[in-house]
Length: 364
Ligand SMILES: Cc1cc2nc3c(=O)[nH]c(=O)nc-3n(C[C@H](O)[C@H](O)[C@H](O)COP(=O)(O)OP(=O)(O)OC[C@H]3O[C@@H](n4cnc5c(N)ncnc54)[C@H](O)[C@@H]3O)c2cc1C
Picture (cartoon, rainbow, N blue to C red):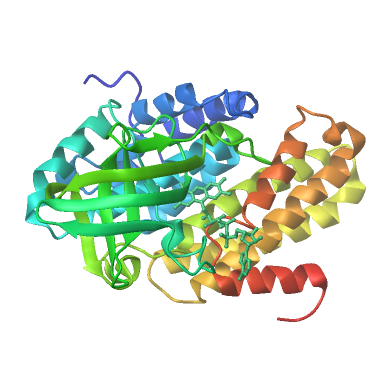
């Protein structure tokens, strides 16, 4: 397919700013379940964003984790909804790439090529294996083995972009406690994608639950497992990786930039804006070191700091924007709502505990 836009094949590309400007201009439009960010995702595809995450042998640019983190910081500051949808695509694709099953090779290659051409979209429904519905006695989504594949019954409670996706990477649990990851078409008989849920923020991500009633998935679509803790043992990154922190820091960056811009006419804000900026620089430095594989802190500590920073900086921006920022349509109000998403998205228990301690005002 001919590329209509210049490809952003490295984070230093001047075209990244051009794309981000387009994303930021459209970001206010994506604020309801009726406004899927199609044009913004198409722009990302045209500029080659989906190629950042794939190795060269799969048609990607083979960006390093540091380059990806840098890219996320820019995209997320411009439009969190679009960037969040992309992260769920990436979460699925990483696990497809990590699959060891030869029978899956040709399915994977065809799907990746279709995704890069913008003809297909894949997303992920795995949180019920990690952070959702874990207190229930029985798994919400059950897989049973059959001679030719697996049968799924139950619910995947959270699937972003489910309404528009062609495929979902779905995690399910077997009666013996082992887990599988399966690539499931949204059009298979027995699959019901519920209407998108209206959310506090990011409603346009068209996130919803998906029901599975006696859904048969052939062996050729088995991505990983069956084994215990299928997400931890696959080669791809686990829950609570640095990507969630990158997005939190991206949104914090947008709020701090707003504060800095206000200091032009309001010098009394300067010290506060600089203080947040300094904290942001420290967190970003840690993010980049972790992206390089240097464990300067745990993923959870980074995420805890990023969560704190995004909540404080968006609310500081609201204080500066005053009542005008509280009126619907002002970006600062939207950023405050979006910041709360990081309190619930893919939050391991230790991050939840640390967030709660900060909110309650006790040390962790
Ligand atoms: C906008 C959005 C998009 C998302 N997109 C995706 C996606 O694309 N893919 C994906 O895999 N995941 C996704 N997630 C899931 C996310 O990563 C978390 O797993 C999810 O937010 C956890 O919330 P939960 O309500 O499911 O948690 P749960 O733990 O299931 O809590 C649900 C309710 O159960 C009760 N409860 C919780 N713990 C206990 C307990 N110990 N005892 C008794 N009652 C309890 C509480 O009343 C709680 O409100 C998304 C989440 C959101 C909000």
